Length: 104
Length: 428
Image (cartoon, rainbow over all chains, first blue to last red; front, side):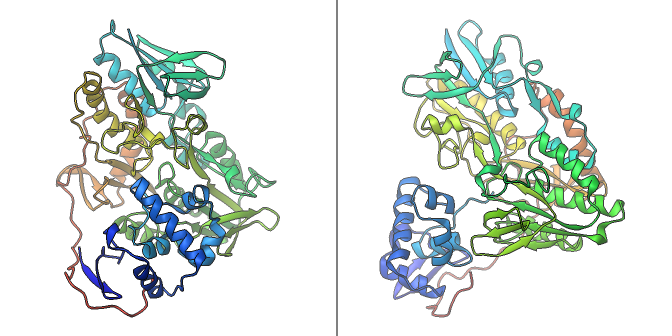
């Protein structure tokens, strides 16, 4: 796994830049990752990221958009506003989680 | 006497009943299999129905004719499973106690989950082909099509047989060409994925095939609703795609009783260990075939290969032994590409579909990821194998676990172990 440095943190990432070590993440890093994809974090963004990280800890995998809306109660429409165009990928990227599998 | 109850007499349930009846002592174990009706559908055949190539009779048989003596077949609807009490409650009030339970109730299309789909245009200009009625209705609509926009659309992954929408598109292109109206019909492929398929090598190959056929592709399209008056697909990010004839793959969900029983995830799939298919919650509940949440294709081939592993594991499990077999997510799918040809793809949890030969290295006779007539004949021959060899639980001479022999590895990327600080913006 390649290692990259973001906001003075050495982190392990996969070929597409998604973090691979759950415990290497912190809020400061999340904000830096968001900035890299052109997103400025607001309390609404953090609510999504918090749900994703908690759910990942319980389930061992990244929540899909459907799970974020049905279990997390955050409407899909809003996710597209907060993380435009590719919310599933972008949310996972900012939250320091693997890309959601969903697709097989 | 101990009871094995199997819910669902589809591909996985029927194979399990056949294989376990031969392996379980008749004096020690009863086997009961429950389904809501007595019609077993050869679902891969639905693809050919819209083009008038398979009839109703060719894809439907009685479920009970595929079950052996010594298995009780019950036609009933499941209300719920009380997994704490080890009992299945049927809607007619009957109760089935079990020692071991296998949930094999599959997945079904839910057009009602997308607003607007069922409002007015359903089965008029909006169709699906994942049900036999849908495929038959679509056959009539295609006969009347002579110009306009034909849109093939996937709502959300996972879906049963993820290659079928591509196959439908290739066959539609071929069919329109042969009728001499291809130049009057715009063919559009709309997907929530970022390419034609889920895995990179196959996605590039299949995407290239869409380009060659002049199919317009709209990617990353997450549908919010259908506007039936304006005949428009509308996405969450407010893109709009007009259609004259829409062939949609609705959201797929597992059986509703799974949700009522508290056994499912948000799509009613049963969370299981992906190697053994044993429920993560109950030590005597398995989910096999499309009903589970394993990260593999929802497809008959996956049901087939996983049953091979499951049967030996199950016998160990009831003997109190650790399960020694591990399913690898092996899937093997023919992809019809039109003009009497097909591709074949072979993959698992860890390895994406790659070019090569199958099932024998270098010899084949099937080519992986390449359009050939032999693959097409293989696909057609499979219907006979399904009814006569697979469902009765006879041995199919294909290995259950995927093999790398005969496959060509893609060139690997050189990865740097340490990259410098990145401050530039990322594309995503």
